[in-house]
Image (cartoon, rainbow, N blue to C red; front, side, top):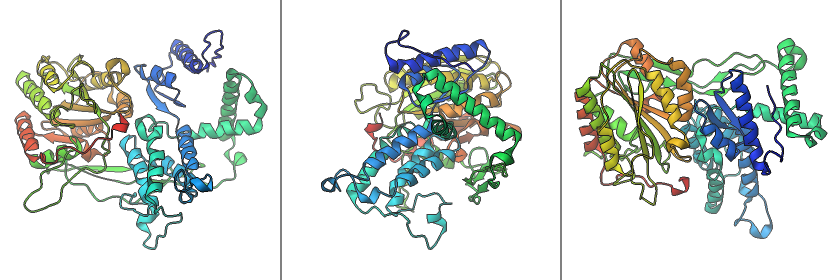
Length: 530
């Protein structure tokens, strides 16, 4: 491993030194044919941009620094002068600094690489401390213990609720949860650096190069001790993984799939028993109706309200997806030989209509909307992958629909892995992808991959970059169903949709339009997220 020492003779601005050192390390590793899959750092903005513009590396931020920032913000509003109590701070928050840090660590460690889950958990922190446990995790003590009593001071003051909510929502981990879902274990590095400070405090007066070398020395030492003699290093007892109970089976979705899941309650330690699978998927002979699939798309993809029926006055809204984030949505369309030119035209037309149903209304892609807007890009794939347009190519819905419908059919094989590799490259600032928006992919395909990159090498990196939805068209073998299920993000029922053929796709769009509640079309957007 190379350690780069950047001095003021190379750049007088100290804030840019880390970016220059990072670039040199990338060059050194590239010369040694070492590829960097994931890069976690302390959210240096210059390094952020550098990594985001690197095609094959997933940019991640260090969780330990994010938790420290939240703890600092909560500490600030948990103590102060007597005369400012209730205005700038409150005693009701004094016992919550460390518990909130635990909440955040748990949320990221159990997010299953789904960038929405940490945000949902952070949103629930204030409710939990207000003694409202409706949205708490089903395995939490406040849910399973019938005699549960809050161990922390219950927040009863509206101003205090707002203070805590503001502290959490202003954090980087809340605004950009997708940047932390793969860096969940970096707190081990933070512990190591703390150990180094205790053992050699004066060494931190030395240069950046010497600190890094010292840290690497400690890492090697700890690794060797762990390999050679576990018993001599620690007398700690083995800790086995502990899992929650299985959830109920989901409703049938996609092409006849149902699933159930469980979460990790305790991670293994000191050689304890590892964690088993967290999800079970079962493929059945039953299929959901087109009407049920339309409902699923309205709630999960469009995130809009369904019309009420005469039998029910309830309004169904997908509550577990946070509103307020505009979308950078990449469309991936299969144009392989099995699709055919006629069906490809149907796919284009229906995708264009589907995008027109997104929020905000009436034009979800109008760049002149001062309150914010979505962006869309499109690639098609067969034997080759073609970028048709990027995220800044169109300025409104009419231009977007025209660009989609003008895409030419190609024909050929089905190189889905290559399409996913290109999708990863699309979520960069050079292609018009933005920070602070939801990065999403919608893939339309009629079959399994039969050429190109192996899916196992690209899907983890794609899921770290974006939330993936799949609209699958046709009949599939058991093996094909398993492959296509692996494309989408979790929870799978919210991201996997399927119809039997392209004519059903036309009917699906007709039903979606009929089911949207036009009297209350869009939830309000939180413009602070832009």
